[in-house]
Image 1 (cartoon, rainbow, N blue to C red):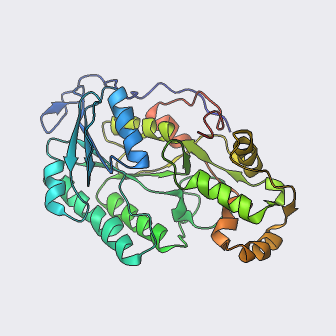
Image 2 (image 1 turned 90 degrees about the vertical axis):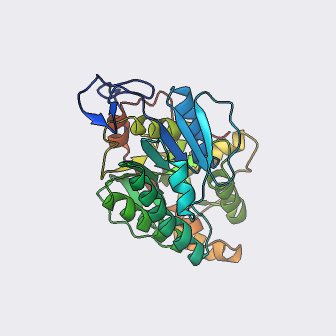
Length: 325
């Protein structure tokens, strides 16, 4: 899959032509202020940096915000479970990027943070007159593979974990309120504590490829995801009610990922290969679950063309050029 450069929509930091239409007193040529909720997290912190680099004013919202020396970035303290703190933190904001979530397995926390917390954030945004909320969800809402090049509306989400189910429920809340949803695939880069470490652990535990490592996966560097989110936030309507995949347009094989990690000295390559059924039996002896084996043994690649086109962004590098860090 290839992508052609599009220049029909503004890039981060650019403005659209002045318009008589206003949003809370602003003309469309006035820079918006974007709040990043979850600003100290893996994706949130990269998004704050992308906004600042593009000259977009930003409010960095977190439970324990850190001081920033980035230009035109202010910090605000808030918690998704504390509605009053959210309303205060969003004062003067035009667009919200919701990148905060609980990623553990406790069902009560999934409900309180991911579902009820998202409802609290949407209510606080509404009270501040903010009509544009972009929710950073996960490709995990689709559940188990294989997924081979699917678009946003080609498969019905079928989450297999309480966590992913809560993220899907949060999506529904956002879309019902006219926000939009971005579903990143496997994100890598500085601060990644899940994808690359998890991939290494699975391959080292199994000590084998699954079907020679031929399954294909969509990945995205965190700085690419951040600039896509920043670009989407500058859209006049922030794509109200829409859903987007966020990944590099070209998938990579599990073997290519493993070889890149081996070249970086982070993985010893498996010497053998198993079928998926054989891997299921062998993996159980090493504490690997069906979800672990699904990651390395079935296709998980998606079509992101709509998001790259909508934001007018270009890729400019191969999927493995920044992998691993």
